[in-house]
Picture 1 (tube, rainbow, N blue to C red):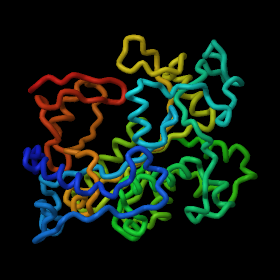
Picture 2 (cartoon, helix red, strand yellow; picture 1 turned 90 degrees about the vertical axis):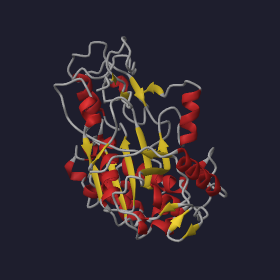
Picture 3 (cartoon, rainbow, N blue to C red; picture 1 turned 180 degrees about the horizontal axis):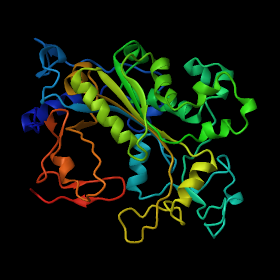
Picture 4 (cartoon, rainbow, N blue to C red; picture 1 turned 180 degrees about the vertical axis):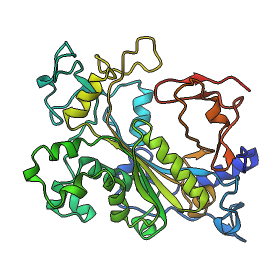
Length: 376
C-alpha cells in the first residue's frame, strides 16, 4: 500500500522552475489549435539519472508515491463557441452560457416539440447545449482516410481525431514522438446516434458501416491513426464515462501498462431517439437548462462535447520537457446507491493507496449532486 503525500514547497518550486524553463518555444495559450506544425518542447536538464532534481522512470519504482500522474496536454470542443481551453476559460470568466435551440443540422426539433410532453413521440424541450459548428465537416485526407470510408464515419470519431491531434499539439508533442510508443487510449461515450441513423434502412449498410459506427472504434481508430501501442478501449458508464476513463488511465500509468495516455470523451446529439427517450424518463429540463445544485432545478439540458487530456507520470513529463497543467493526486471509483455520503469513496483505497482524507477533502461532485464531507 502506498499513501499519496503532498509535495513539499521545495518540490513545488522545482516543478515550477521546470515548467517555466520548458515554455519557450511553446504553443500559444490563446490559439493552440492554429499552430502550423507540431514541435517537441525543449528537453530539461538530465544529470545522473535525474531531471532537474527529479528521479526519472529508470530510477524509481513504478508505484512511487512521489511520482503522481500529471496532465500535460488538453483540447476541447464545447458549446458556446469553445474550441480550445483558452476559449473555455473566457466563457467562464465572462459568465456566458452555451445554451441554444437544437441546431437544424442535427434534427428538426419543431417536428417533435409539443408543450404536453407525455404525448407519444413528442418532446417538451426545444434546446440544450450544442457545439457551434457543422460536425459533418472533416478533412479526412489529413488523417489518411479515403473519402468513402469518411462518409460512413461517426462524427464523434471525426471530432475525436481532430481534438486528440490538438491535444498532442497543446503538449508540444509531435506525431513522430508518439508514433509507435506505449501510449494508452481511453475514450468515454454512451450515445449511438449515428449508428441508430445508419441502421434505419438496412439496405444501405456498407462495408465501412461496422467500423464507422461501432463505439469500440472511437478508441481503436485513435490508436490506429496515431500508431499508439498501449491499451485501447471505449468505456460506457453513462454520464461518468470519462471519469472512469481517467481512473483507468491513472491505474495503467502507475502499474506500468503504458508510458502515457490519452483520456477522451465524445458526445454528439445527431438523432432524436436518445433525446426523446431521456425526455420520456423525466430527466430533461422542460426549459433545456441546467440549474446545477439549485432549488429551481427541474432536470438537465443535454449537452455536446468532445474533449481530450494527455497524461503522464510526473517524472516522464519532466524528462520530456512537457508543460504541467495539473497534478492528479489520486482517483477512486465506486457505486453506493443507497447512501448519499461520499466519505466512503474518499477513504477508499484505490490502486494500493489512499486518495485523500475526509478532513482535507472538502467536497466531492457526483453526477447529480454535491455533498459536504464530515471529518472522520
